[in-house]
Length: 523
Image 1 (spheres, rainbow, N blue to C red):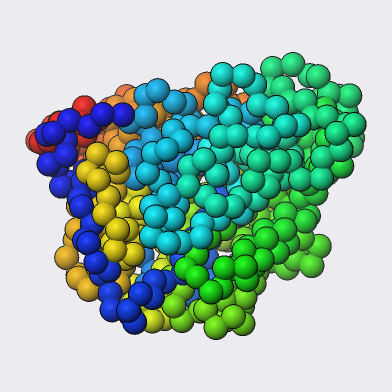
Image 2: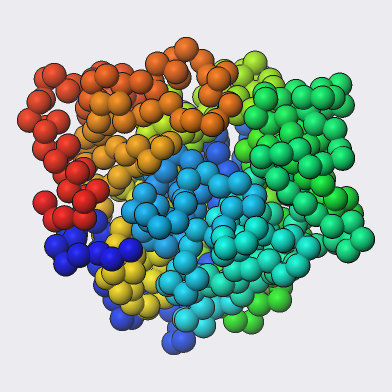
């Protein structure tokens, strides 16, 4: 995507050059290790340090108590693929017109152009070993031919800056349900090749529609494709029996591969993205964690996030790496309860508030869909505190560039701001004053200071998503806005009082600014 000159001058777009030298003081030549723990569908109110009492997260709470906990942290989008795209590129996903960046299937082509400067590529230039373990969901292959999971699978994470990857292609509710290490499916028997389809049932295995009696969790129609490990998935998969993962083992695999990567690169700076699967559906906890929370299976898998975090932190401590490792924990979007599987997540809430009282859920541009936990822990540099400064995951690229002394070309990461001074507590000034939030179908909202603007009809009912057929009446109503919405989040964080009639000039100004940002023109 080409960015015009006027757009490059817009500070509110996050267009900055990061400093040539590090924004902190460490011994000469010593760079921090960086571990980014990214949860999947974790809500603003799902952690103890954000107010949860029915779900216990002591390991994460310790990170928050010893580091900085942001109360205004945002995912760029209320769904996974666009948020992950923006995190790695520093560019809002809705700007990318030539590649599909909506929620991707497991056989979708790579949505990041190989060769562009990404977060891992930037850190690799700085001398880091870069790795990702867990969820990918940014596509594989070049799109010219269907992905062949029986051969080398590329381009993928390796071609966009990672030295090592151990990933599943998309979400755990989508086929193929396999691990990929670098360019190959792990444990694949050549005599039992993998075939994948999202259009036609090519599988010999029963589907959830055909045999609901075989299911561990009942599912809606969209999630009633091929049954794998007692759970029906989106799409159809044939073959690859020896390579299929077991949901109960996913968390342990993420921990084992993450710890191994850390151990391998203990003597040089490394960047690890631990891309967790929880609490995304289907929710399955490892046996030792089943029934340990007071909120059913969704609570169990959030406590599983805490276990994974604790294991990674213990590995850093054991290797004497904790002091000079920057650990960042966040989520790719906000919470959701029912999302295709009838796992009693709503019935088992027991008073827990996944969004912390914020309005809306995943898929929507209300705060509950986009505001997420964001914690940074670095004993050598970050003093314990709570920060109310705006921080979008789009800023991760420029911020880590600032910390590691790298420069980001203006046209490369047009929506990423260097917030390294914010992260490190070197300033209390509000550097980011605006952020754009993306919902389904590329619908956009604008947060500007304390104000939030959502255009009329901005939250359209998405097509081709069976899960929405089971949406609650309130959620369905929120997907059809006949009038614009304006909220003052300083006094109304729950977005309950629409002020668009009271402040028409504010609505006009914010609509104009949102349009200017969309068009790439400075206000």
